[in-house]
Length: 258
Image (cartoon, rainbow, N blue to C red):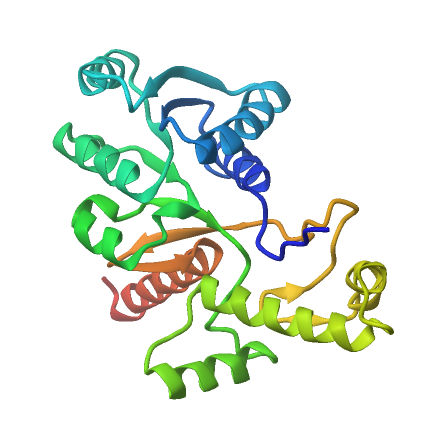
């Protein structure tokens, strides 16, 4: 009887695996893993997609709870020419990995978990966070479409800051609950269950359309985001902005005869 509108850890691992291999073209990756239930939820699905389905290679698995993991990781980075890292863990563990990579002058790609989505931790990471990629549930606060536009404006008017993905999911959770209780007649467990499964199928939330599968998980796949200048931005939107910037530079050069 549990329903969730925040995508599961398994979907996060699935998204990261396919993104590394298909979008970034990284066929070899060094894996850093914390010793938590969070990691144990994400890692199997990542390996299932990246290794089993796509044929990628995990050159080594660095266990962050082991003493001396830094020395082992440094040897792998030096010897194997690794150009992609996937760090699975909570924010503080990821921060430790990023500092290690910065100190070792690593210049490859870094993909990590949604747990890194913390203003404090990103600020503490500083330049080490630049370019880090992470999957997050779908929510584009820059969208000019409804209901996102009205939600963002009301949120900013109330709190004087932009809403994050957690605020967006909290908002949708509230409205899904209200709709379910409105539909359930009488408001008993079996009727609430049916309302969540079959009654809110046309609800468009700020995180997208809310639909639940047979297990109560929302049918939302995370999307990839990137840290640029301390801000967490949609990776796709970042690419589009960069393309426009490059095209404008080329046009300026051509028009100036440079």
